[in-house]
Length: 466
Image (cartoon, rainbow, N blue to C red; front, side, top):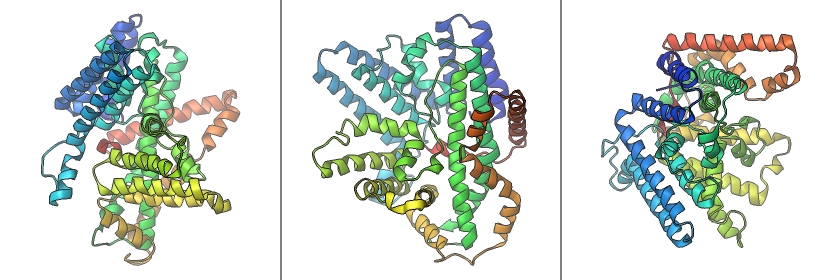
């Protein structure tokens, strides 16, 4: 079930809110049971058979958490339990997400096995791991009730597209959260902003990017020079507003129910280095890799540069693999490994002077071309053609058509990549007229988003693949 859909907006969400606040308002256990059941139904709407996989994952990590707590005085046994957890989780992810890819490496045959990818499996698997590891580290208490673990892993706002919510972040709120009108209002506001980003911006950029990338194959392209750059810019904006919009909606929904999720995006396209970009982009994933992979490997506190390079390599290789079973994702991750090494040891970003942001966005955009392409050969054709080698002329009719049709979306999208509106809100938030206009604008965004949804406009979702 998608957030920007008629079923969610006009059936599922109103029903959940009504029962949660009108029927179960004073019953925390009842609210948790209800949210758990509704989260399972939310997932079952799109993946009915894989609800049993999710229940298995919940039961598995619930049991592993109890075992970790039982052997709190035996570190050797605890580490054995953690090792067992990692092996099982890797096997499950490997089967559903990577088996066909691994087989294709050795046989050259794609899709040997007909295995459907469970939606959001990478997200809820990482959350399940977070629960057990945080209990092991003492950063969150063990849950003796299956319900509470189930709610943490399956909670519908962040279930299919994150942000990846660390157990220590919400451990206390599972049993002791206090909903209030201010949080609810802030949640509604944040949800509307996210809905607008997804429906009014990301979906419009998707029309351009999908068309342009669809005209690129491993053998060549029918796109012109300008159309290729327009497509790359469109996808750069699409993936940001698609994913950031979903994160905003998830954070807003969580707040409506008394949960406070951490921020997942902080204007990443204003970054002046690759390092800064990854401190602002998909923050929950990068902090997860930092705390559960990089630091346990030794982080930056190691005795040799070789070991430090190895630690960084592991993180970025796994980051690429996490995103999908395709060489494009692996090379994309390794591209960032190389860039981060160049910045760390050779200060490449500092040598760019006034062009730091331009340098950062150039490589980010090239990375997105690689990320979006169906294969490495198609990505190379696309990037090569962007520099005039293989493109079909300088400009074609599609450039003029898309410029006329989508120029306002591009302008608004680029403006929203900067904290312009955030700063305006900070300056005028105590002004009554401004606040009235703000409410009108939020209502307008909601109204337009609903109109677009009911018009059956193009509504792809990038992170279904992960």
